Length: 135
Image 1 (cartoon, one colour):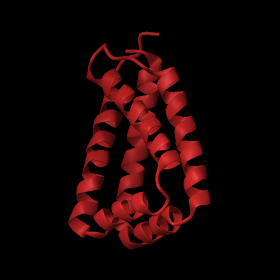
Image 2: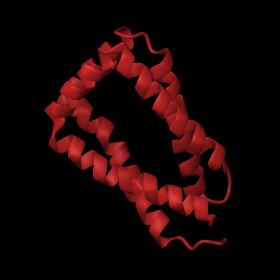
Image 3: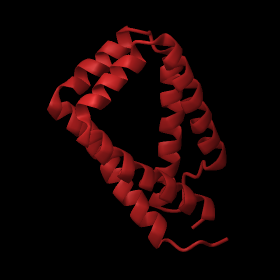
């Protein structure tokens, strides 16, 4: 396994494992913060620029579509980050924000949206710390 795959799987995995529980514990504060960000076009632009940059860096550094499940999952997450950055840059300021916020305000939808990130975090952290580097 490439050392880059191992590093990114550990980074993304630990990020998800640390971020998701904090967001779930502080659900209402998270929703209030998201509403504040998504109703401010300047913040959406900054968020889009940062997310696009991170996504591009990850895609350029790790675009492996073979070699097992772990490298492919890391590559998929990289592409999703890039797409998310583009979404924020091109999102209609209030239309897209209200759609996202209305979905997340329902408690069941909020927790359903957080579950894949937590599962992804568990998988990537486990895979990253149990894999052996080839380089």
